[in-house]
Image (cartoon, rainbow, N blue to C red):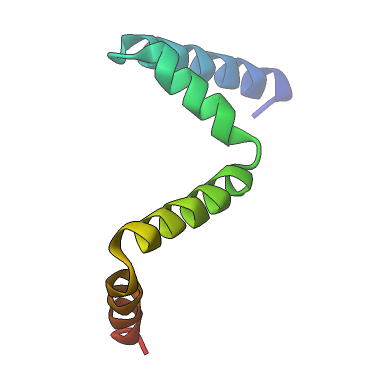
Length: 76
């Protein structure tokens, strides 16, 4: 396959994805989330998971810690 054919193929697939994205119910929301997480998703997801874990720990107390320990003890 020539380079020009490959670039043309990439352009057509990009247009197909764009039309698919526009056909979704909330295209602006999905576009924002995909652009926000596309660079370095772990930069956002790890702190978010840490904050959610702290929130559950504050709300549920020691029972949350015991639940997590029981959950991961099954895999050992």
